Structure formats: C-alpha cells, structure tokens
Amino acid sequence: MSGPGDPPHGTLILLRHGQSEANAAGVFGGWADFRLSPHGEAQAADAARLIAGAGLLPDEVHTSLLHRSIRTAQIVTDRLDRSWTPVRRTWRLNERQYGALTGRSKRRMRQEAGAERYERRRRSLHAVPPPLSDDRPALLRADTRYAALPGESIPPVESFATLVARVTPYWSDVLAPSLGRRATLLVAAHGNSCGPWSPSWTGSTNRPSARSPSPPRNRSSTVWVPDCARWCRAAPTSPRTGPAPPRPRPPPRATPDERGRVRRGAVTRGRVTAPHDACAVSRSRAP
Image (cartoon, rainbow, N blue to C red; front, top):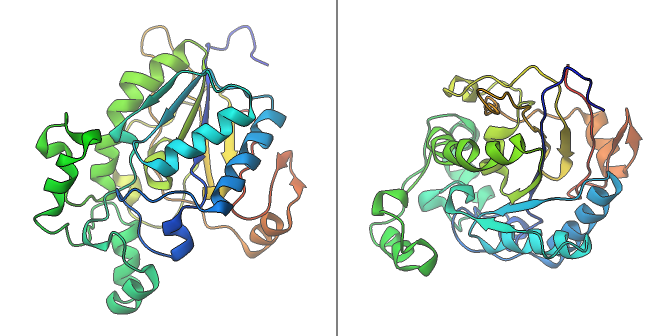
C-alpha cells in the first residue's frame, strides 16, 4: 500500500511469450514469425492463472507484431476474462533482429563460432552477427505489417544497443504516460525487447554502458516472470517528469540452488515460483 507521500504509479507486467517453435527447435527466432508450440500455449495459460492469483488485471495490453507475442497475450486475456482489454501492437516490441543467424541452430552456431565469440554476439552491447542477405529486408518491407514503416526502420541486424534505441521511445511515448495514470499494463513481448525495462538485470557483460536513465529510487510495484528470468518494475511518476525508463542490465545468473527451486516449483521469500519455463508473479516494494 502506498504511503501519503508516495507518488502515484501504475504496474507493469512484463511477460515473455511462451515457448515458440523456434525455442523448441533451438534456433534463432528474431523477426521470423514463429508460432507458439503446444507447450508455449500451456505456459501462457499458466501465466494467466498466476497473474490472476497475484491480483493483477491489465487495463492495457501491448504486444509486438509477431505471432508468438500476440498469441501469448490473447491466451492470457482470455483466461483472465478480459478479452475486451484494449490492445496496442508495435514493431518496436519485436524481438532483436538476429540477421543471418535467423532460423539457424544455436548449438551449431556455438560450435562454428566458438563459445567466446558466440556469447559476445548474443550478450554484449555492441557486437552484431552477420546481417540479413540483401534481399531479405526487401521481403520484410513487402510484409503488410511493416509496409508503412520507413525503409531504415527495418534493420538487417541489431546489436543490443540498437535494440535499446528502438524500444526506448515506446517507453517514453506510450508506456510511461499510462503508468502515470496508475494503469496496470501487460507487455507480452520477447526476452530481448523486454530487457531494457528490467532494472534488476545484473551480470558481467558490457550491457550497462548503454546510455539510459537510472531506475527511480521511489517505491514501485514489481512483477517477476521467471519464464525468461526477468524482473520488471513499474516506475513511479512525478507530476513534472513522469516515469523514467530503467537502465538496461544483463540478466542475472541463477545459482544451482535457485535453478533447482524453479524446476521443482516452490514458494520462497514471498515469491511464487513455478516449474521451469512457466511464468510466476510476485509483488514487492523497491527500497
């Protein structure tokens, strides 16, 4: 409960889509429009149950233009009996563009590139894989979903830094004003496109060097989605400045004990955890 001196704020539910066909096959998904696997649909239904159990009902839903994001949100809102909730879809929430790696086996790419180079491409702030072939961006521009976008808005490949630059305007122009009105927002998107709004990311990669305002220190609502091992925090608002976007940080590495608890399913330290790849929700106060 907020105290008398606390600024008003909304709640941001950050939900990574359920398992996709690309996840199940172990290939890079990127902007390719993979659908949810049967297991992914079950994960989305489980996420709805846990969101409802935490007393969270979205006033707005935000998704990418990719089927796996859209379908996850549809399942969640249907299970919450809130299929009428206003939905906004945007290319800015699309997954990271993996360029020539799209559709290729992650295991094979790791073997060919070597572990260090592979991790640098995936985890560092500025490293990029090889771009799409020359004809592929033209095919994307011909897709009705992207027809209205300027040509330069369809990247042949992205680093994490360029992805942050893509999603940040959506925070400041769309999500932050809604949070300022104390709305509860469900963002059903992708592990990478959700990442810049997750202030609890910590680790040893060089992602923190991205230029983005620091997360606010005021109290705020927290939602945890173990499906992609991310935490997110809805930024409190100020009448003058509004919510500030959190600083992007790399994902925390779970300890063996933590991984075991997630696999088994448990209730620990006030957080509801679920079997691996299912979604769980927790609410807490930031210091």
